[in-house]
Image 1 (cartoon, rainbow, N blue to C red):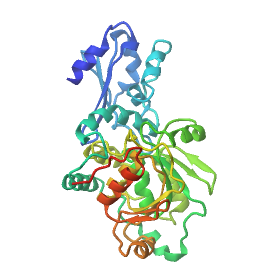
Image 2: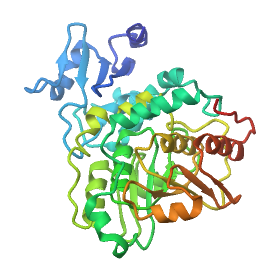
Image 3: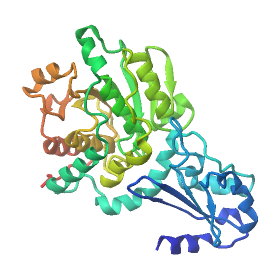
Length: 381
């Protein structure tokens, strides 16, 4: 059916502006970009047809490129992904005016373009409205599978950080991370934050953002995620690999980068996004346009199956929050126990209403009821 749509959308073979593209993503995280391109323009794809065999031109003029292959550490989804992304209309216009470079480039945020293309497909599986009733058993099982896919990253604090104990302090000014929950490259940064036991201000930037994406464009110059701002050093940067390396160098207390943290993204980093059917990707259509006066506070760690479900909801409501990472061995464990009487996560603190909640089902119901423009939130059943 997808190929029929591609053929139908291809139209005349005399214009590049009639190109149709589709992306296919398997659980092994092999990403294929498929482009319908006239034969006379195949020479423009030569950069993809390299000796390593990454690119392969088929007789029917369909180009299949396993995008995950050949991407090294710190090089995320390339420029070609934007062919099916946020700028697809303007790009199609430009294609008739100038030659477009199709070689892979380093562009972490372009993953958002792929996800935005996949979003309708994922919504069909995910059921659309995030406030609608959910089956709690299925929610927990599927989030649990996502957790297994990302073991062992994002669950515990590194030994060097734990050993520093009370001598280690959080950055004087809070780190600021602009990201969205479903993004696999944002995920690797959050995993690093858990392992470094760092607190951070999270500014969710879902597709359809009404608050935070324009801040990223204004500050960094482009719509790309994740985007880190460190007011302590004046550093702001894109590229998840660069961000992770910066965090370890600046706040890692000499600890080495965990084996596979960066490399594994291309193999299992996409699994939570698919398994969770794109939750935490798109702004809920009934999210309130008014931002809370004070940031919410969430005690969590990246690879916790219950905390993930809450973070997805917060992202879909585009609510800024302070993330208190409480991985195994975290210095925040004592603080969490004092507030909740337990060390279980997630635990939500809303300073705007004085509400404290520690059950993920209750948290989700509360969030959609309190920060939706319509009070139609439902229970998780």
